[in-house]
Amino acid sequence: MNTRKFLIAGILGGIVYFFLGWLIYGMLLNDYMRSSVAGVGRGHINYVALVIGNFSMGFALSYVLNRGRRALASPRAGIKAGTIVGLLFAAGYDLIAYATTNLATPAQVITNIAAFTVVSAVAGAVVGLASRPDAVATA
Image (cartoon, rainbow, N blue to C red):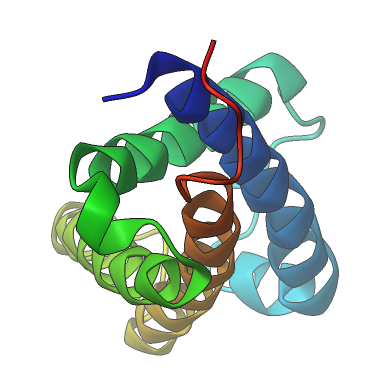
């Protein structure tokens, strides 16, 4: 695995997760996703945890795509891998949270899984693009 490509793709993926997360969750779905349980949302956002979480997701996708660099080093392959990885991460996390808490309705769980899958598909495309053999000159 090319460490430089892994790092650059991971950073770009983290940036995409952060900004698309802000757009989709912070703007488009904010009221809907907060509507299930009053008082659950934080009064303020912990941006340190938010940034670390988004970059963790970016590096997770970068790792997956860069481990199979020949097969996954394109935007199209990135979309496919991002969609699958995002769907599985979101379904796993959301269904376990739904099963053990009262934080979301079934409709919100489905909405979050769909939204996170879309965000991951776009992040996957960016990571796949940055993972191409000609994307970053090797040191």
